[in-house]
Image 1 (cartoon, one colour):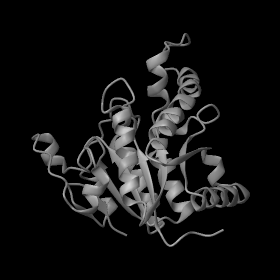
Image 2 (cartoon, one colour):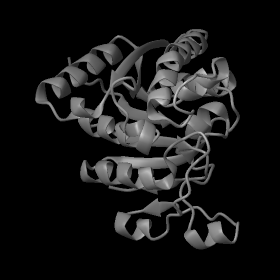
Image 3 (cartoon, one colour):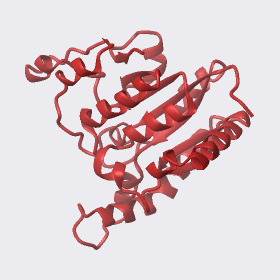
Image 4 (cartoon, helix red, strand yellow):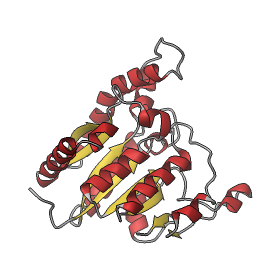
Length: 258
């Protein structure tokens, strides 16, 4: 079963977007994402790569272990939080008439030919039947994104594997800002990028509060999608209607051209 005539978008939602920079997952933000999918679903089909499992779990539990920063404690938190995260997506999206499904992936899946074929075929079947795949790292067996990237790299690998039309990374800034503007707190967004090596010189490497990524992991993601000839946008997911507004050029965001 192949792709439909709709353009395919991978939408990556970071932890800071899902929590609206608080300590709780925001149902309102998940509803905002769902409403935008409804508004765009005639032209686009969506694959979501979602962080947030650890952030959800922290609402419910304070785990004993080798300190809250220990990687196995974070893996355990992810195991507790993932079903809750999926339930929130399922309930919020169902109210909007959207169907959801869960896919847990890890990096070795992208290296084995059989796994890659299975991922593509499964996601194509889900989309053909109007189920939105919601992808997260399989955190109980893999630690790459917990340690390094808040699912940025996972989203880029997924976008490349599925040969999508667009990857949108929703984060907590208006795209990537120039280094000088970050230093003087004016935050001027770089609207278009063609040269990633040049972009690296502009990136400030501070990480986000809930996420593990920051801009460094986004650069890694951009290198993957650029190589795969996939356009990538970095948008401010904290704002309501962020994707619809970006498509209409109503908000500042960074577009990485192929």
